[in-house]
Length: 269
Image (cartoon, rainbow, N blue to C red; front, side):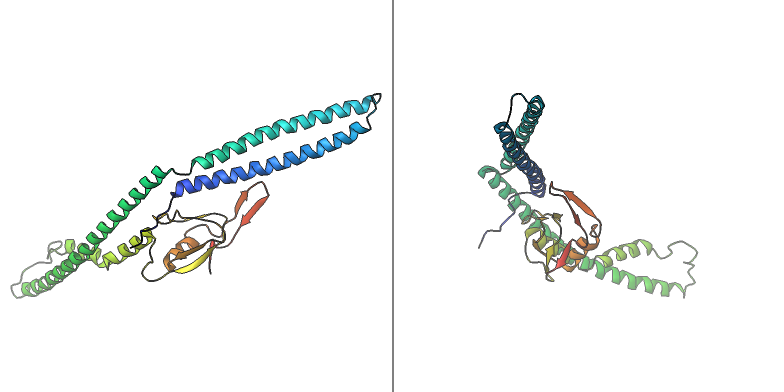
């Protein structure tokens, strides 16, 4: 039997890497602009020096100013590159070692094992709830018979609150009636957390956000980018579309301008 594939990184680490890469893109882009500015400035400076006349004092002062500007840009470029390189080292440091990956895998296996054990309890609860419903129905039948039996002996039950001792059991009946098939939702939750096919089927949706964060599972970090395809049940899709601010305006500055994201975060493929 093939071993279950779990996610290599948690959602928090995945998001941290994404944020670092966003910063890295900004500094890399800024470094490119500065390098271009230095190159253009040095070329212009070279053209000036080729026709430079030492007796042209005005040009001499302008030349010194241009040289100073280039040096300032070079200093900014050095700081920018240092920050860029530091970000890259931080990103590289997020990669788990073999020991860390193995430890995470063992933890995920343990979580899956405990979740499977809990499902067995949930199914047992279903059986007990069925028995409890049967007992409550029998009690209700006896209560009705008690009510009928009170009449012939002129027993004044109605003068006392909760005269047939039913209120406690009515609340209990309401609680277990609402639970329905108790373990069916447990099965769906377990399938989702394990990354397995969810009963009732899923549909494929395409992400329309630069970054969309959904519920994390053992199999997926729950971090998706524009164009990614995700499988969701109808209920989950409604939560994403209507439970999140899908129609708001989201502005993200990457150094390349501001991107506006509107409309639903996912669309049916």
